[in-house]
Length: 359
Image 1 (cartoon, rainbow, N blue to C red):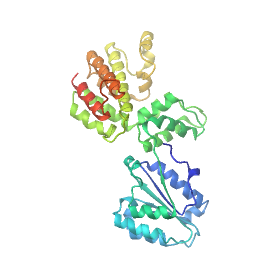
Image 2: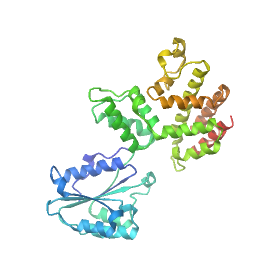
Image 3: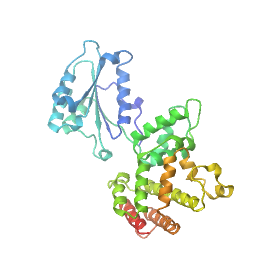
């Protein structure tokens, strides 16, 4: 699902409840309403942002009933109302029924992705009050399969192109956390600069980092130590139990990518070659390394990655790496339903981890 565009909102609605798991995407929609109702200097006097947890339901209700001596039009943004008990949310709901003239209200509510099936994460009374006079909008986050296309669209809004290969490399590194992806995109676009028209894989490798990559490192480290318990403990951060069918495929691809890079580090170490300088690599070795997930392309300018792969390579023998790739392949077939019995995504990854720890 795509994020609603500001022009698709009814920015003149007196009350809007915006909910979703991404603070950045919710913030964009909130800003579009503020901009539409408080142009120019009016924003300084007419905008009020309140935290319902800090001032309480009565305080938030008081802000809604009040007015401004300096501005005829006000926008009141209420945050964290969803964290109040239902009875206190009911107080805010009643206040929405008697707004001061010229007041526009935006309720910014954080939710988990689980609320996609349940709706807005507020009390029934508050939801009904909003529906009676305004609109409820979900700041939808893209699913794992949609992320590369979403990244390309984000880059395009800055007047730049991004090939699918670069977008996939970006997602592989950052993972599915949209807020982190937005932060990393800002950093990436700053690095590229205004004159460069295309964002390349090399640009992504040079500056983008991600929590998910670190967690996969932890998982592979634990597998290399034959520490199944630690590896299994790392899995929930990468693949929640509530993950949709197919959610394991991107994670399996990341594990496979890590193992490919570990294998390349192992081969280079065995040959007595440097892991830090591709220019010193003999020509015949350059031809042996893969074009995709190439060790030197993946670690260029990121010495901490080189050290991590070198450490992990020492945890595996050549035979163990061959067996590891075979297990990854078998899991891929099982997840795609190409074996006798299709496995649950989470169970398939748990079995893979146990098998890899027993190599």
